[in-house]
Image (cartoon, rainbow over all chains, first blue to last red; front, side):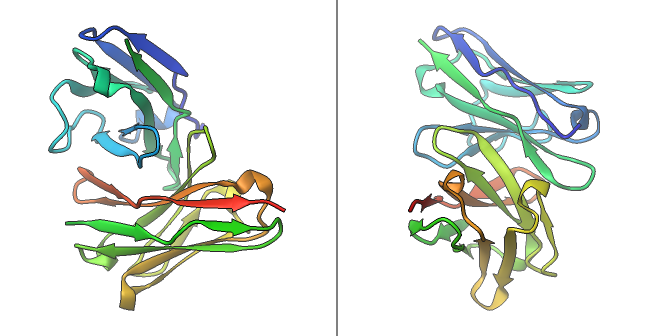
Length: 107
Length: 118
């Protein structure tokens, strides 16, 4: 299927590890990206090719993949990491698809 | 540095069309695809399609087929997204976005709010 499924919300205390999953059949064959979006702002890429981190993204952000599930991990989450997170991939027909988004609360 | 600058907010009546522009600078416009993404108020990101600025080839999400047209003008390094037969549930922020390099770059415009209201 061309759907990506994420939990609607994840909540952690500052300093804890936050894990956000994204599941979908396409992930077995295609790389995923993760975007962070804060209110009123455009999304920002935080992970690409499942586990690569763009320059300028803090090391506490990491990604992993297993079968049809990818996971974004924020080790030692900080208050400023509170945001919506979206996974993204491309289907066989080269059409993009976003997950439904996960609201991360850090408090 | 890469910049994508979009046109300003629009208010349209149901049934009308809207054309949003996205002017690129800081890189070779024809070198990278341009994607368009919709975000309704309080909702998630929705992929609409892409255009290859070099060839003009397009690929649209099935949901928007028949209503969306993506074009480009290479002389001014600008991509356009035209959405027709607007409905109230098309009220959203529309973003252009360009994945670049080995995937490590994914640049976004600032977004354009389109409000559809009678």
